[in-house]
Amino acid sequence: MRLDVFFTHNEVKQGDTMGRLVAIVDVLRASTTVATALGNGAKTVIPVEGADGVIARAREFERSAVLLTGEQKMLPIPGFDLGNSPQSFTEEAVEGKTILITTTNGTRALLGVQGARDIVIASYVNFTAVLTLMKVAASSNTDIAIICAGEEGSFTLEDAACAGRYVRAIPKRAESVVVNDAALASVLIEKRYGDNIAKVFKESTHGKALEGAGFGDDLAAAAQVDSYPVVPIYQDRQITKLGPERAR
Ligand code: MLT
Image 1 (cartoon, helix red, strand yellow):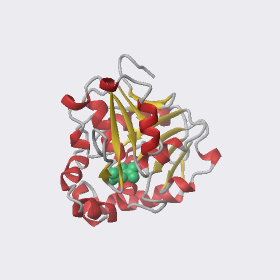
Image 2 (cartoon, protein in one colour):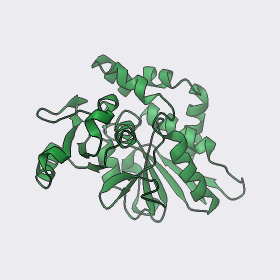
Image 3 (cartoon, helix red, strand yellow):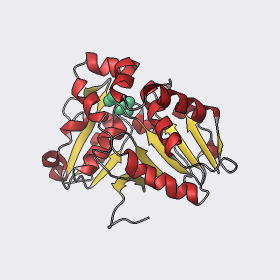
């Protein structure tokens, strides 16, 4: 089987996702926000391209049933209900709601995936839950692609470190798993920081930018490993959580 990491979604070619389990990693902050929303009881999360897209899509719902959410240049979008701060997606705010979300990189990475067997949203806050799905895939020789959202087409340290944590944890029978160079490099990054995720964020460009913009609490929330043990699956243009009502 193949286990590949892509440091940006721009690198992904059509065949790279075909028939695979694909994990989208946007630790700061879209993946973390999606896992938090579903963990706190949101009915579904619908990723949409652009603020206008969210507004148009919202017309299909009762206003009280949806939340318009997302960011532009990290900031909440004027007139929307929530931004992209994971901890604002509380149980009180999101329970039973359909979340329409647009974000700069995470949404784009997700909407670009083609032909995957399954698409899952991965982060630190739902690390082990998603790892379980990856282990099942690995045990049945299903190829895995971990796609880092990156930042405006560039590499991000935090997504690479999280990808490396997955690569390290997926059991590999040496003779049967082929990994790409980015997967090997992601492991080196993960080993460099280990469990000190706060340090990854402190040293990363986007982590520093979020801190500078007053979103330091988001970094702390995003570093909480397994705080929202959900498996968010993207199917039929929406993300719902795997569970008794949605088995795989
Ligand atoms: C994104 O999708 O680009 C990010 O989640 C940006 C952010 O930090 O809000």
